[in-house]
Image 1 (tube, rainbow, N blue to C red):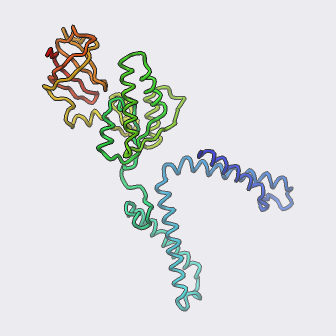
Image 2: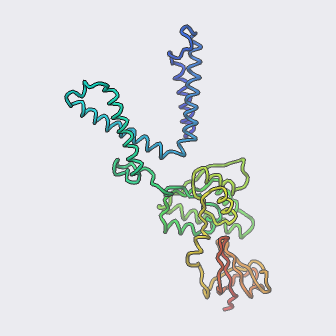
Image 3: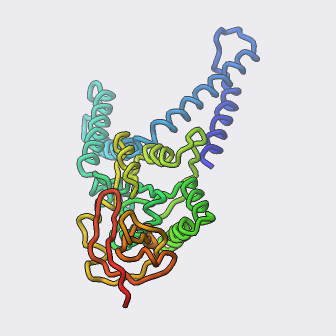
Length: 336
């Protein structure tokens, strides 16, 4: 929609240029030449303005808003002040009054811009219903990758923690999640459907602002590279559980939130001695070990479960290893 408005603006500016009678290279220049010059000037000027709007305002929208409000407020104050001074006897007849008016207007605009910059967080009290962005990182968008959605803890974080910015879900990431949910491999299919359930849960939460981003980046093949490119383009924060993605994104200057890093300072999901049910899907590296997985993909290493491959068994948790690459749970087969 925004590009439609930009194209209409360029077309309208070019049309206005066709009727600019004052655009003349020479006094006796033919009317057709005048028309062509006016149309070209309108096209060039409007195109330059659109380019500036695309590449500048998106990055400096806060600064531009401050200047706009400051200049408007300064003009209002200076107009009132000059009107009041005009009532003073002799002020209207003073020498160089134009320069005095200019100095008063310039000073009021400058003081207004400085005042808004210094009190940006409290600007809503100066002009009701208008609030400029606060200092810091509040309001920055959070970009989610597939791993953090399948993990599921992001939904709990959003419910308990008031996030200051919208949750961005790239369209290409949703396509990847859908392909995982449709995978012929049962484990991948369960993980993909779990991710879709988590998204539905988050979408129903009125406190979470979820936005679908339609960026495609057809020249980039890897989904991780697309996520990094998108996060950089919108000045966002990438939320992930992928250890390698975290390292690559950090090297490229992208801010990262790794839920596994956060989990290292929180209480574990399971404690030693707790009983849990796991399906053993393959043999472990050690003798008589079985390997199972939780719904979020956490690996569970079970002693004495080699003969129970393909079955759901009760496991008594003995320990848990938490690293920034993920977590592993160790347990023993509980026959009871």
